[in-house]
Image (cartoon, rainbow, N blue to C red; front, side):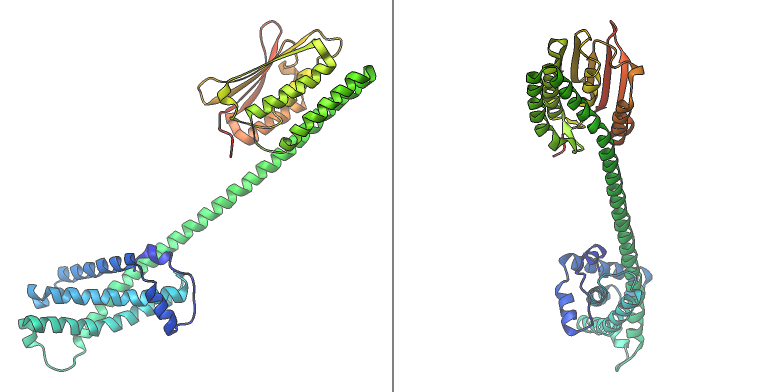
Length: 378
């Protein structure tokens, strides 16, 4: 009557038929047999402690031990049948109560006969005082102690099953809650990315149109580069995860497009550590900031220098710095796009990530992203 074994018993249910009974008995596991044997030993010890098992003296203990094993295994046989009928449903107590009663009724007379037979073979003096003929006294005593012990054992097993089922339901509910939260966060990310992507793409297309008005050849070259870039970028834009290597590759491709229009008026440098190439990084987080700075590098502006660095300093944080030699990232220059990027970071990492705009030396400014360093998801 092992509770853990019973919980994982076959869940088929049906009417009580000889086939169902035999099928239930064939499904008895070695673990259930071992547990039932130990329960029989426990019952024997309880009866010894109460003095009941000492009625035949020390010599009679083997006989009472055999009797308790008979009672325990009779309960196992009826218990597994009840499991099969109820599909291991602990709330159907009536079926299990009936199984306990039937098991006790079957085991009691068999156990009494076994004890008397063993004691007779041992020539136990107690047997000389036992009246000849049938008597209900000993079978009723055996029935009652079996009923009490088996009933308590079955109640413990059913309670453990209810607790296990409640725990499984709570776990399933928690998984559902986490899945719902993940869907909500992903939906929010999709909405936030939808606010970032059109602005970024429209700005780029506006630059293409402007360049076409000035120089058709350069405009056509820039459009070709943009098409090639978008073919590589679009499959990743809607994803909720990318890598440092992928995002830097797209940033470099975009800056090459920008150089077609601005020529020598824009310079850029990218610095990173090779081991960071496969680190996780949100898509469409780096490009909008670069675009934010490029928009301020018009034809009348002096040379614009952008320095992009993605470094890890050993504190489990990835630090991304986009430094501009002008005021592109001055705190007062923050716009709706910067706000959207901050919202995306908060949705992904909570308080573990941040985006700050700050002043640097020599009138330079920088956008600094800090987020947990994580391996890319498989």
